Image 1 (cartoon, chains in turn green, cyan):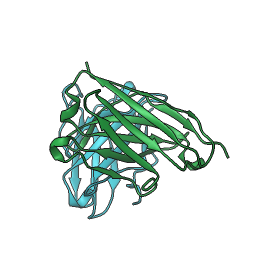
Image 2 (cartoon, chains in turn blue, orange; image 1 turned 45 degrees about the horizontal axis):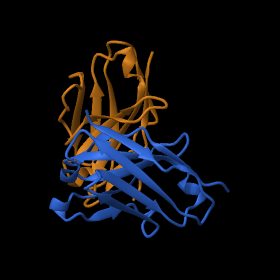
Image 3 (cartoon, chains in turn yellow, orange; image 1 turned 90 degrees about the vertical axis):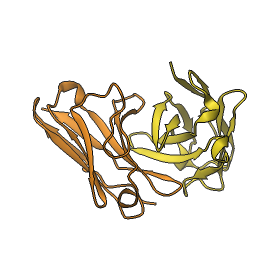
Image 4 (cartoon, helix red, strand yellow; image 1 turned 180 degrees about the vertical axis):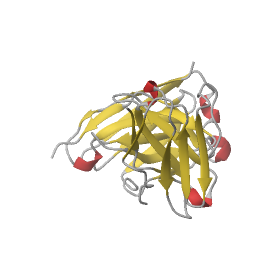
Length: 119
Length: 109
């Protein structure tokens, strides 16, 4: 059974940093791209970014709204994906979902980690 | 990158069909056959329903179908059932990045 479990969420002051982890099991982590999607309270889904598997270079792409502030990385030895969030803004307040890609789709999702950046 | 445009809501009676549109541009929906759809119940994580415009993952009922014409993709739910009441989001690959739709609430009358 594929499982994705996010952790590391919480309250962070504007300008501070937070790192989310996505611990996975049930599949060969190194073979798949992994990504992050967020959902602000009462709003729709917003793509944050993803990291390709090492087979495809292990490169990353990020949404324009977080580029330069957020960084996605992965540790294939631990089957964990990370989202490093720096220079947090109030508009980054959201539930952050980790996802496993299959082809060009987000096949599996975690339950989310809540990040709150107060004004 | 702007979100793909979806109707805010659609509704239908049990047994009827509803179609949700997802309009983008030639840089996303129109440029790639990599549109996917996700179903989300309140307070739950999204669930993968359709990939590559028309393909259904195993376990997804065949009353869910996808299509695309030009810059607009569509999700059709045939034989609407009570449990189909949820929010639905489209998502398109856009050349190294992805963009989601604005989301559509499906109400079963």
